[in-house]
Length: 230
Length: 230
DNA sequence: CGAACAATTGATCCTCATCAAACCTTGTGG
DNA sequence: CCACAAGGTTTGATGAGGATCAATTGTTCG
Image (tube, rainbow over all chains, first blue to last red; front, top):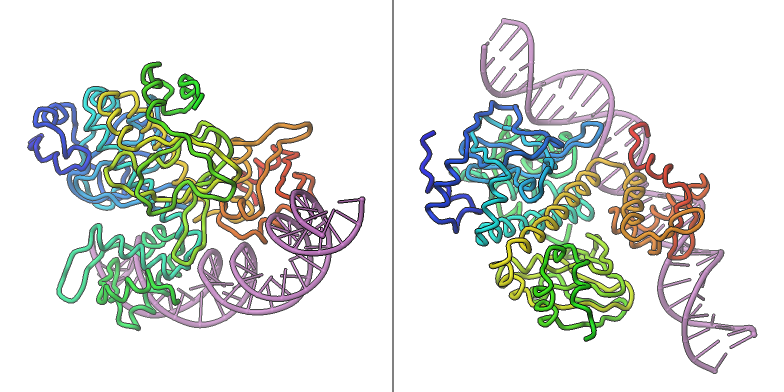
């Protein structure tokens, strides 16, 4: 593996780590390469490793007994995932992680992180900060799902995506995902997503294509997501 | 205040604390008494204190700009709440805490907890364990809301409540809350909750009254909550 | 070019939210 | 101790918002 240990400082949980710690961590890491559509781990598997995505893109999802899925979040480069199992011995993953494109990730033993945290308070604190953002985001999304109409939820999902992984192009922000993905992220169906996007396209807010959406009028999107009068 | 410091060990985050630590914490705590319907704190307030409920009952909720609310969880004796703000300086509460009955709680400065965690790894670890259970529960409830029908969601909310704060009586488990509460917990309306409960009563699964539900047939409830064939 | 996959669109139906009205239950004050 | 107010609950009627199903139309890639 030819990874500069110091690059790990881009990972939010390691932002306050010492150089030595980063080197130690790197020495305990192995690299895993996953093809598009394949899985890092499944919900219910023993949480032996946690991961840091080095390249590609992945999604975290939960499925119910009948196989219906919801997207919890999308994972980008230098983001940590599967770390919830690290704080408890013999834990299992509460979600499934699937590669959206061919991806590589660093796999580190959960036990090792737990051990490190015993002597490095900054690590615990930074991991807790990450956890609180998850809790807050899930709480917000839960409220959204319970109280907001589909159109607004889709608008919000789109804006979240734009902030997280949109690429600026002339005349807009480009995003790449399927209607199904967006449906899973906003708690609806691909049909409804398709209809809503078509309507927005008619209004000139977005431009759509296969696995592609360009937000032409971000301001208009925000007002759909936030305005009270709708 | 005449609280035995060692009683704090009932708080899950303090389960591994030393006796001395518990005494220290007690010395930094003040007691607050809140009337039924009044608030410990509001969403958006600076998170200066976190709380431990000593007596009574409270609920954590989030509201959207139009005032619609969702219940995040119910808080019982010896449970900690408002602690998310403790890991980050100048944080604000992400939810509102309201007393369901006249209650008393220990208030402790968030700063102080953060300080303690710098030198006591067990504290961080136990707080993280608590956080992971929140994350997992929210993830599950989010999936439920996105994929399950109301009847099943209400059944699950009821079972969660029963596990958390039900009292066993002859011939069932007794719970005490309004239809509105249950509606906020399962993401529906009090009308739907009322209808579903009435139907269940007709089937002999539960017995209902004003601010009261007795689960007569827990097994039947579980099968509504879990069965695939519905 | 054809197969596989993604997206669109129409038609239909069902689940729930909403509104309105009446009914119970509980506690309070005259 | 009764009457009444306040809040909780039930039930019916109605309709909107989306889910679902089915058929068709792009789009991409081997």
